[in-house]
Image (cartoon, rainbow, N blue to C red):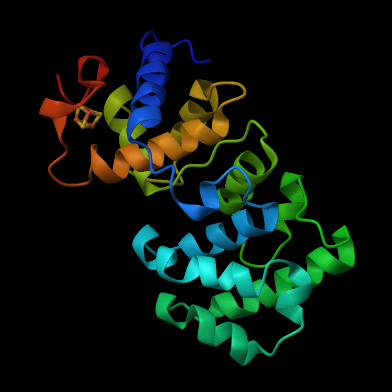
Length: 215
Ligand code: SF4
């Protein structure tokens, strides 16, 4: 845990907020979501809203529950399913990543960062998210929402830059051992609904008393 004086209190309050207000209903967050479903969700969520992904996710994983089912059909069939999401390059990601998972990992989504980074379409954020959400590992991932929340609360200079080292460093140091998955989901949900890019709801914010931005 970070040595920042407000860090423990921030994490506690955020997780309490998440328990009551988080988007626990999202299908890829269910306890029985498979690692492959988590990977599919993370690839779909790249540059795409949660609402858009919700429209296609369940039907997609019902038709294609594992890498074998993805490589068994034509590229066109995959493309048709994810067409509403845009970014058609994802069709190739799904197929190439599925091939690699079958050929190099016996059909199982790997649980090592380097192996996940080796899958098509998976960068640092996706790899860390799959480690935390699919394999329960203590891994952190910083996207624009997470960077914005951390930068505001702790007065970092990096603002909402998801690539800034200080945001990743703070995310790492503040992550609660054993609850990284919840922490990441909490940061994302909080950044989407309370600490929004414009007009953050500071007057109704559960961590306002700890927040550098609100002072
Ligand atoms: S007080 Fe405002 S800026 Fe700070 S975390 Fe809450 S919503 Fe974000």
